Length: 139
Image 1 (spheres, rainbow, N blue to C red):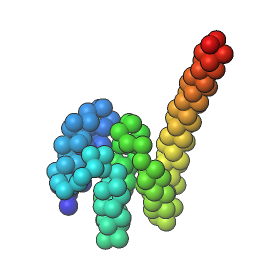
Image 2: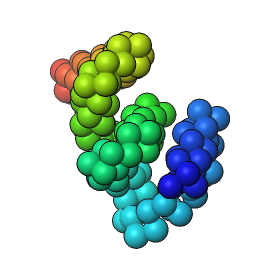
Image 3: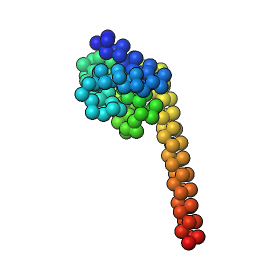
Image 4: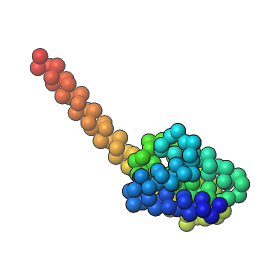
């Protein structure tokens, strides 16, 4: 199991370094049958299994890796909310308020980033609609 934990740590380090190929290679070794190149679902299932078996460090790393993949824009998967919720429950049950605060801060930044992206999309669509209406009125 320590090899798996080290591999998960290496995968997270690859994401922090913005080296998706490195992370993807490690994840393909862990999940060789994965049809999804983004891995969030696989990470969540493995994390839940590890949690049920009492392998808390492994579960924590798997959930954080799912969040990291979402954070670097490699997946727009709503399952990341499941990872956040599972981590929050683990931290709450074990009295890890410091880690819960870190997760809360990370979640806030993810939501803020998503809101900013949505705002940019709305502005772009509004501009396209206005341009389209101007073009139609000019005819």
